[in-house]
Length: 239
Image (tube, rainbow, N blue to C red):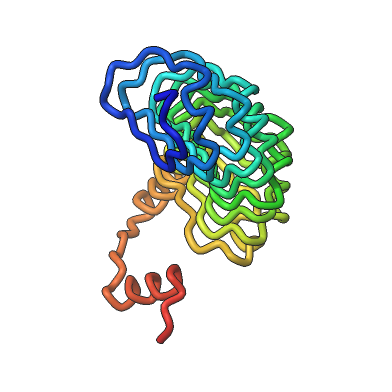
């Protein structure tokens, strides 16, 4: 691998690798996609600083527990970073990648959001943090004004911060499978671009459904016309 030059995409999925040389990608400054697959078993990732222009996308689904700052300090051109399905507890080292537009961290061990998350406010549009261990949200998330998609589903959240008015571009907000019992008013009518808000399997929804059932009310499924209208609105389909 050390002899390969100018690779753009590289995949080692479904192997039994346990270690990478720090010089593995030293001669591949223009790499755009790196995939370690589901069976890559390492606890720390370390690449050479010489990969200063190391591409636009780093993709992983392994067993990383720690993130080496040496790698990310040089990846100033990185646009998309996928570190989902690992064992990461702290992702602060990637919060200094100010050009990131998409950050995928679903399926890790994350229990808090670093304050430095706001460093990515100018470009981050997609943030996936589902299937983690978050039990609260920091104010830093409210500073990500360019966000279009925010996924916080399948965590341990019991409340949602009311300081979300800066998320004027947010279109999709996933909060299902948490422990949320109340919502700030801003989520109901204060986000002008919001098209999809998922809240299923939260005490808030369970309480609402139970109340309607006790009152003898029945759920009426939406008509095909209603579903068509929703689709047109969500996807901005001209008509």
